[in-house]
Amino acid sequence: MKVVKNVDNHPCFNKDSKGSCGRVHLPVAPKCNIKCNYCNRKYDCVNESRPGVTSGVLTPPQALAYMDKVLEAEPRITVAGIAGPGDPMANAVETIETMRLLKEKYPQLLFCLSSNGLNLPPHLDELAELGVTHITVTMNAVDPAIGEKIYSWAREGKVVYQGRQAAERLIERQLESIKGAKERGMLVKVNTIIIPGINDAHIPEVTRKVAELGADIQNLLPLCPTADTPFADLEEPSKDMVKELRAVAGEHIKQMTHCKRCRADAVGLLDKDRSGELCGTLQACSKLKPAPEMERPYVAVATREGMLINQHLGEASSFEIWAQRDGGYVKIDQREAPGRGCGPDRWKQVAAVLKDCRTLLVAAFGDHPKEILLQSGITPIAAGGFIEPAVAAAFGEGDLSVLRGRRPPVAGSGCGGNGCGC
Image (cartoon, rainbow, N blue to C red):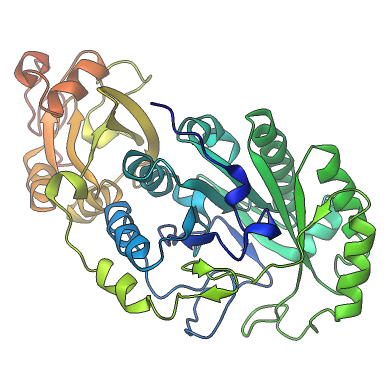
């Protein structure tokens, strides 16, 4: 039975619902892929309300357990969102897994996320399938000359952009995110930080552009000067400046005027936040030990072309990550392998990259890496053939032995016996 959601029950998008509908931010995304000159995520004070602050970080299963407790304490919650403390899509696997768990147990909730947009476009289809209805993109400039004053760097995969290039890439992806989210029927809010002397005169241009792309609402947020950041000594915009900019922007797009600059672990009604009250509950949930199948829900694969299991462990430059979904198996991520090298440090690094995987399917591997991976809770299996049947077998849906390659999984098979995993 399809669940029909009332999209007006999001208090950030609809001011009329802020007194009756609450939200919870689930802090499952600690990593960030850009560096903003106004952001510092080091501090946490229960009385501090700003993005990037949280009293703890949760895994997806822990977030589900916390959601259970939150709904018991505050049944008026209508929205489950992910807003950090880093960027949700810099933690795409954790974010998407959390949304999947929520959809299975609480399909009646509205799902939303707040992102800088850099890594959002590749995941829009999957987010739409999971039922995400509301997206917030923080966009502070559409001119790279201004953007480079706001952002220190932006990272995509192993590529780090700096200065003008970082701003150009980020702006390009933000515009793509807004457009793509609207094409998929999502409601889009654009957060824009008012930074006096940096982008205040440029904000009308930002507003016109996001309105042109179909954004539903804009939130002009006054800069919150934060210690130990490049913008720490800037003054917070005056109320008059904020009011004037909102009046100009309001001619092009609806304005949000009731924002509370929420924490990454905000919970409750906008006017009655309970994150301090539930801080202990969040921290207790962050210590929960999940069941083994929840702790390691994925299977990793070493492949050259994405069709066959045909790479030795020592030569793999990346690993595909596969999950069990709706009776089938899907690739959900691709992770870079540590730089090539020998010795136990590399295999410990591989284990860290695959810390949420129960099994690693490769063409062959040596005894030394096998021992380290097993000690880390990952079972390496020498396999061959097509990926999907092997993944199914690794999840217990078949006999993996028939898929194994002929090459023995020991060092010295087809190599000089140097112990590098081949």
